[in-house]
Image 1 (spheres, rainbow, N blue to C red):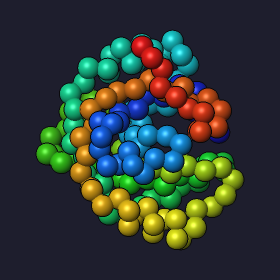
Image 2 (cartoon, rainbow, N blue to C red):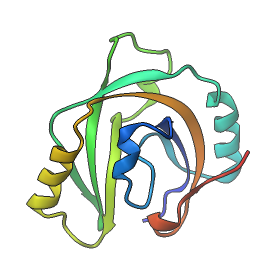
Image 3 (cartoon, rainbow, N blue to C red):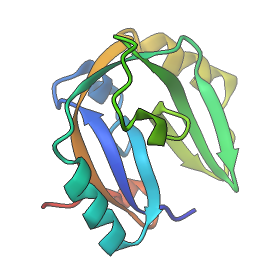
Image 4 (cartoon, one colour):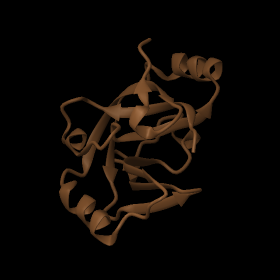
Length: 143
């Protein structure tokens, strides 16, 4: 599955969620499957948005879309005050694990739920991400 260019909202480098990284930063996807000019334009609009605090729901969600398997937590806003752009986010969640053509085991799902102890995080940085090819090769664009 190719996500082309994406806009992600991530937390600060020192947040504990980043210690659970497996090939990518935990993130909330703002928009995916963008062509580069559209992604760049969107990044310019979003790069200065104010940080937000989110809380992870208790349960890990497992999705499989055409062999692209993901583990994530749904998120809610801590202060319950929706920024004007919040409704533009489809299915707001923090992604923690991906893999291809292989189901996550019950152990992997439970393990993620167990190790992610800190449930609140502040998303501080909008990143433009090249998400072409395998997720292990995805990378932030230096802008």
